[in-house]
Image (cartoon, rainbow, N blue to C red):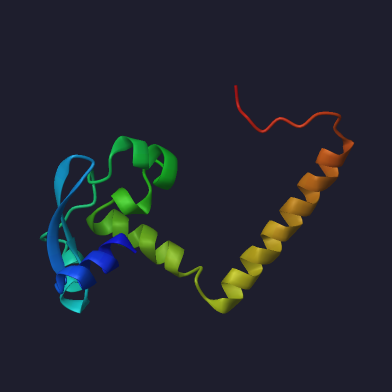
Length: 115
């Protein structure tokens, strides 16, 4: 809500701020979205800090790809966004959780932290 709230406060769809000590431009609205998704103006590769890539997206994630690799990966993800595909994915996840629970119930100790 930070960007949206500031846009309302400033009565503007575009404003300058500082994030993590660096100059940043925040924008919103239809015109901003068209600019943001213009691949001649913005590149994804290298845009996110390593810490974000390592913890939030994962190295090599679609958010850090450009051009054909980005479009190919995005098409793959979007093919999973139909009601049928999401329902199927939910069923697969439920079955995997059930299998994991059966294994966990048989263990004396559970440890989820990799050492």
